[in-house]
Image 1 (cartoon, one colour):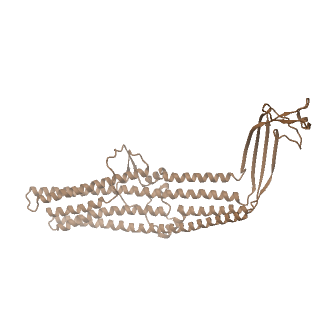
Image 2 (cartoon, rainbow, N blue to C red):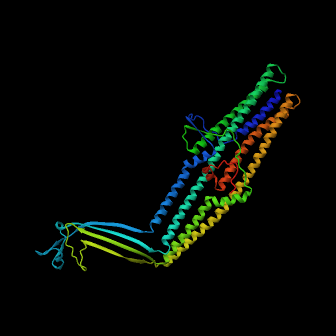
Image 3 (tube, one colour):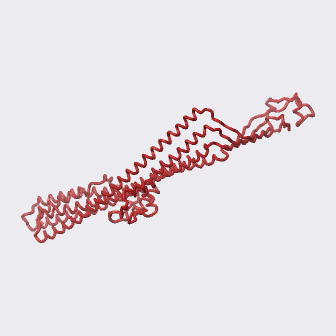
Length: 488
């Protein structure tokens, strides 16, 4: 190979190095060396991200709050009001008490009066227990309970919605790291081509070949520096991708995360024969946004019943038991018509009826509840349409990515065959150096583009699973990496 052809070959290498360097922003160097290494595959990455994500935990906490509100609503069905009240004060003594008169006989003495002088005051306490049980509320209690239960369903759907977001982000981060590793290996291969070119130029210079000059060597050295710079960029991108995956898994900065896979390969995924219709139906069944909207509609319907119940009288049972004590004890006459408020036991029990007569306000509250119900129903319709769109978009993106992988794979095969043919022809002095240079450029470019196509395809598979609402469930069940999509 002559020196000019080698220089042109290095130009092709630089072009490939530029391709390799196009990636995420470089991380800042100087981080401390990790002390431990954790290896994960795609499923483990997603599962750990779901377990450790504070975003998912936040949604779980909101679900716990909704569950507690549901329990509270359920508890209101029986003994909605059970309370104990106490009062503590001072009670008066007795004055003008005739000699020889005591106990129940005192109430017949008109001259006996309360003595409020400080020396006569004594401790007084009153205890009262009250119990209230609704008997008929015209749907107020049952509606509140149904609404609270549907509120739990809403929050559960929001948990799954966030889990899908975290799962697809974790998967994309995982494949981002695999891509940078593959590009790093391709950069090493590029450096090997440059090293061979340098050795060839130095050999020709030593042999006194007139077709080679020091200018060729300088150009080669400049090319090598450019390639080294690109290699550093690729390496820093790889470190950034590893750091991103470590952050996604919430691992310590002293832990080095490493994918178990050695190479970036396309996910084994077979598109369902019913194609778009199948995935759309799966999404309508599984997407948490649809379940959330449906639960919201049911909750709002229950709240309409709650608001409408104000038109009708509420029937309930109430019972109270009170005890008044003054120490030292005052006489407590045992008489059906006379009692002492500072001593004795009392009880009141009965059925009560409560009717709200402000029907104008009730009508307005019912209309507000109906308006909120309509809003949630519109939201449900919008959610279904959005899900349909997202599924179709993800489905067609997957078809495009699949075609790109197949095309890039064929291009890599063709470029490899071309390069081998040109190398054989050149070794036999039958080839053209320009053709060899073009073959080298095509081979390096095809490999780099194929890696990116695989990365894009894997991301499209994950996005379709997210759009159908099955990504997190498949990871939890261990079927994420099945060779074919399920046929249910």
